[in-house]
Image 1: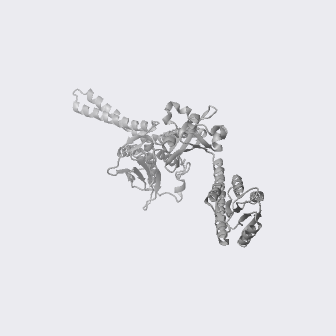
Image 2 (image 1 turned 120 degrees about the horizontal axis):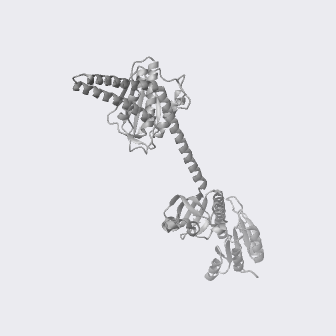
Image 3 (image 1 turned 90 degrees about the vertical axis):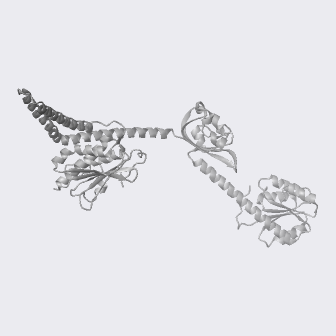
Length: 522
């Protein structure tokens, strides 16, 4: 094919006639029209000039010795270099049969002799414009095809073009690389027979791409098994779209990739997440043990009180039984008090044991009022040590939440203890305020408000980072652990500075039934 001709390029016109006078007339007619004119007085010269210069238009006389115009036209159209030239026949023959023969051989037009100058000029101009546009269009198509080929060759995913029966009619280099076979070995093979033998147990209807080829339904499947020509197989992600010609289904375009490394990375990531979760649980457990260590003296006092009471009531019972006349009512009352004190001691130990144990995997539906009241009772030791109080308020209609009770209680207890310490250090007498209310339609927000000196400027960026603490002897693990535990529940944690001083910490938990939508800090 010829090279493209731009709008400003010179148009070449070849004049072919064995009559010198006719050539002169044609030359004089076209010489001032901006064309590059070539002249030949026989068929062989015309073919040679046309092959070398690839004219847009050839004005060709039919009646010539040796090679006539029909023979020249036939050979021009058989040559790929000149096949797109516009051949305009010149002849004194004006019968229909001569014209039909010329058009059947590929002629573009027909001018009868004697010709008129204006007719020649108009027809040459028209055919020159048409040929120039056709050549530009051909060049653009070649460029697009070249660009398309470069794009397909540069894509790392395998690409197949399939016909309606699933036969491979196109394969890019990446497909050959993935399949470990040359492209020519893939083209012509049936996609399902070549690549889907590993899925035969599932039935042919379950083969990837089958619905696309037969019904025009796009498919996107991941972690399917694709076979290679050498008998090996690999896990793949495969996407297919129908190839349509108007409304007619002509097959499918298949894009696939080997996800072996990706699956291995996902498994490694899942293993790493499991290790991190295990370490997080161990750290949380260690944090609870540390909290117990800090509260041990207080709990010893708490347990000692009912035990002392039990001892005293037991002595009273012995004295009552030693008397000659047994006062059964007073003895019954004494024994009831012993039982009540033993229940009190047992409840304190139960709360300690529950807080200390490693939680079972999974979450539970929790009542927010019960959870906060249990935590308040647990914090009574610190409440006494810091000479402060705890006030719990739960808004009406707060629904249950889905969370790990031990981990949530650990967070709430940590925030309450911090609030008690901050309030006590500031010399304030107001109680720590613990409240719960809805936040949006799917989260419960729990707040812990203290009346301390507040948080320093810039704490927003560091407060929940590991090993950052506002306390002189703090390790900086508590709030970081709180964030980790709350995020594991699908919630978030943060703090605010009330206008009247102190600090307000809050965390959110998903309402039971809405856990698929994690809460964010409002």
